[in-house]
Length: 79
Image 1 (spheres, one colour):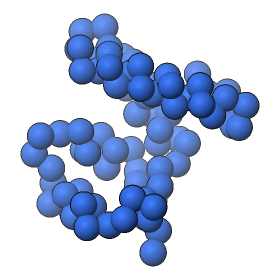
Image 2 (cartoon, one colour):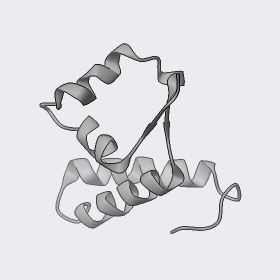
Image 3 (cartoon, helix red, strand yellow):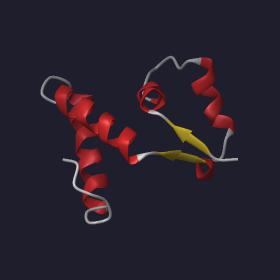
């Protein structure tokens, strides 16, 4: 069974104390998890807003930039 993760779940994954439902994702194979382009985009926008003041957000923003660069041309521009 495949699971489509929404923006709130993606945000929760990075927290120190996970909600029990999000923590249960550890029991699911990575290949059964997916994130929509919209959720990735929303998460990337939020990270970029925080990157000015938060070192961890800065690292995350660099990672999201790399993801968007890897998929350049595969989806309509959403930067």
